[in-house]
Each structure stands twice: as C-alpha cells, then as structure tokens.
Image 1 (cartoon, one colour):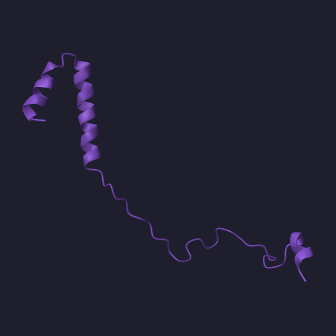
Image 2 (cartoon, rainbow, N blue to C red):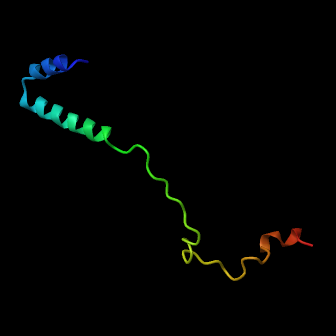
Image 3 (tube, rainbow, N blue to C red):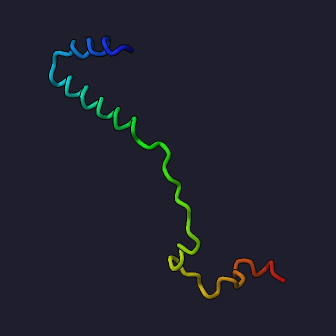
Length: 71
C-alpha cells in the first residue's frame, strides 16, 4: 500500500473519535513491531531449589501398600 493511498484514506475519516482510534491502533502496531520476539530462556542454577521442600525421614522405606508383594 502506498503512502498516498493511506493518507487519502486517513483524510476521509471525518470523526475525531475515529482518528483517535486510528492513532491508538498505529501506536499499538509500532510497539508490536519493536517488541523482542525471542525471550531469553532462563537456565536453572544447580542447587537453586535447595530448602524449598523437605523429604520425610522414612522416604526410602517400603510402602505399606506393597508389603504383600515384597519377599
């Protein structure tokens, strides 16, 4: 689309409300154009979850539900 055609369409707008809406939409498009589409991927750091959960002392003990299957 040429700049002249776009300008002629803008000039056809009679309502100030429509012109305001067009201005807001153009601002939206400009911010969308300059957004960074690739976000930096966070790399987990070894030990960063330390202290966030606790394991029970009998964690390695056999479960009661499986006693009949154990020798």
